[in-house]
Structures are given as C-alpha cells and as structure tokens.
Image (cartoon, rainbow, N blue to C red; front, top):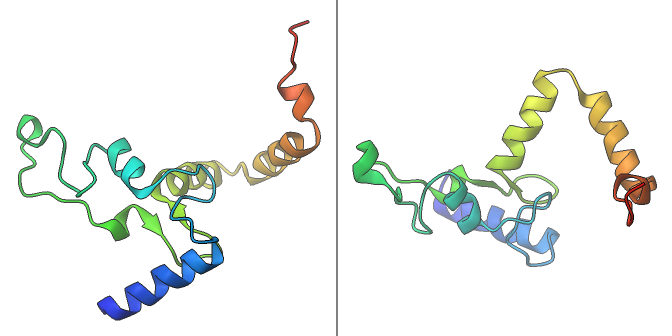
Length: 112
C-alpha cells in the first residue's frame, strides 16, 4: 500500500476513534504492544543479541490495525483468533453480556 494511503487510513481511523491512538479493546498504545512482543518503541528487539535478531525490526503496521471501526492491536486480534478457532464465539457473547449486565456479580465488593 502506498505511504499516502497508509496515512489516510491512519488518520481516518483516529477520526473514528476520537483522536486516540490506542487499541479499542485493551487500550494499549502502539509502544505498549511493541513492548509486549519484545520490541522497543522504534521496533528494535530489546534482547536482539541474546536471540540473534540483529536484522529484525517491527513495523508499525504489524502491531495495530486501523482498517476497522476502531483501532485494534495484534494482541487482541490473536486473543480473538484463539476464541474463534476454539469455536467459542457464543461463550464470548455470553461473557460480554455478563460483563455488561452482571458486573457486581463478577466483581463483588465483599467476598462471601
């Protein structure tokens, strides 16, 4: 994809997300996602020499997707991929309903 198209895609996503460059689901920033995968903010491996990764860098496009309704990070995408691969979409839907409607039951203030 040409760089101009990437910029348009990125800024359009920020407009949809209220100018917040964070994953809609987990609220991680691109730098936090890179750190999760073992890279610094510039995409350079943190422990490169230890693992022989001197020539490996992580591109911004590999950690965040800006093409959907809201930005989504690679961590959340992988988590959802696992749920879908296990055929547990219905379980996820029920859990979301519980989180919305029964928050106090899930997170009681006092233990019984």
